[in-house]
Image 1: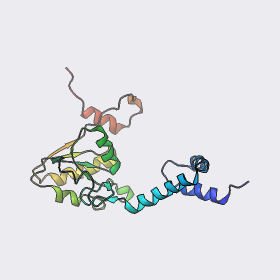
Image 2: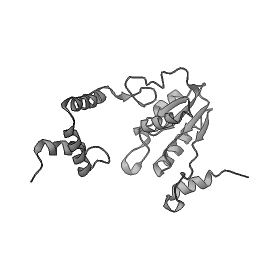
Image 3: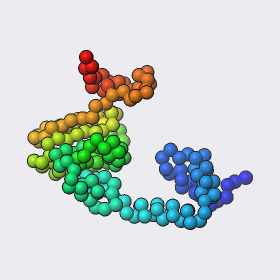
Image 4: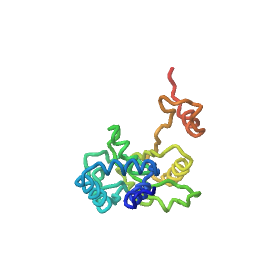
Length: 198
């Protein structure tokens, strides 16, 4: 017996989300069926409001409810540092650590010729306009992938003509992982970033 059309339509729409296959979508639909109409309306309204209101900050490129995000409009942050990240998820992850109090610059992607993503497709030109005499350090915090390496090297090359310190996050072996399961890039980075302990 085929699923009811409205059930199947909702399953199909939920599978546009990453990591949601047909079985997971079906579980979500059954769960939604158990909810009352008000909860479903709240969810629906939240999705619509999110799509209408969310945008990229015109300064750093991070997701925001306004033209200038909360971080860029915070004058108490350290004006001497800018941390370059791939996407807004990285900003929110770093913010949770409470280790960094400077500003961010979101590239919204990484250079990947195979996928047709070139430097001009990224939010790099606005980065250059943000480098003033007040900025003393640019921190590159990109993922340790081939695309991350290519993008990091490209940015380092651009920043050579500016009087600014360029640093990168240290990439090591994650706690609890086995070396045999790590990719060669991760092992190579951990090797290069090893610390003297005695």
